[in-house]
Image (cartoon, rainbow, N blue to C red; front, side, top):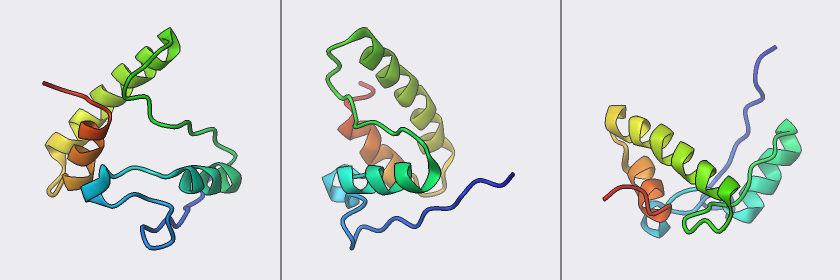
Length: 87
């Protein structure tokens, strides 16, 4: 079964522009969750719980690889910065 493709746009307020740190807004997460049955959560740049610390570590590891391999990883690097990943 193929994954559902969800169209998300900066202009409709569903994604943040790169200058604001990239990533999805609450509206974008709600649309994605509604259309795919997923359960995306808000970013956890300053985790308070152990679960959030694990989410942050996992996100930073995954997105670090994306940013390194992408031709133009501008959105990935912005998301890493927003999540306080790295140095």
